[in-house]
Each structure stands twice: as C-alpha cells, then as structure tokens.
Image (cartoon, rainbow, N blue to C red):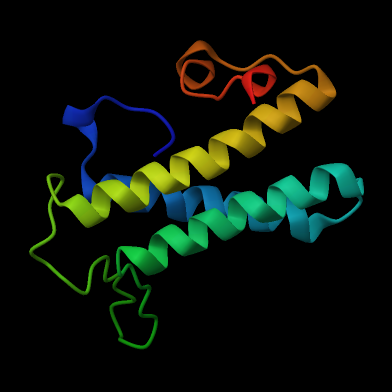
Length: 124
C-alpha cells in the first residue's frame, strides 16, 4: 500500500496490505513500553489505516461461519476508481509523513523503495 507503481495498485491487495499494517501497529502499540514521541506517530499511522478502510468500504465480517472478509461494499470499484485512488493517496501521504518523522527522529535508514515515496521533512 505504501509504495507501488500505478499498474500494481490492485484494490484487494492494497486493502490486505492496510489490514496487515493496522494489525502490526496494533500489536506494537498494545505491547506497551514505547516513548510518547514514538507512540503518537504509530497511533496516527493506525488511524490513517482505519480511515482508508472506512473510505473504501472495507469491512471484516466475522459473523458468518466462513469468517469471510468482505473487502468492498461497492463491488464495482476497481483500480481506476477516483475515490479509491484518493483514499490511497491520502493514506500514503499520512503514513509516509509519520514514517519520515520517525526515521528522522531516530536516525533510521529506510529501504530504497519506501524512501523514494517519503516526503522531505526539510522542505516543509
């Protein structure tokens, strides 16, 4: 979800990626012991994930026997859908800014693919 070429932005895979990111962030936050200056950006990233899922209509219906994940309320959505692209861009920008903030604050290296999409914090 954070970085990919336009031709690889398959909505179902982006939603799955966001679900995985949200789950991982929830585990890290839930484990506790994080400094406040790290905790807040992680919470913001998780919030961006939840906003993305809400905007694209992704739901996880655990009530049926098959434990099926219903990804979209609107099955007609595709990778060329304007609203999907807008939600994806907003999430990438929000999460990317938090990743850039954490990396800059703690002097962390970021993998090249991800680093290419992060904002330059010195420009703002």
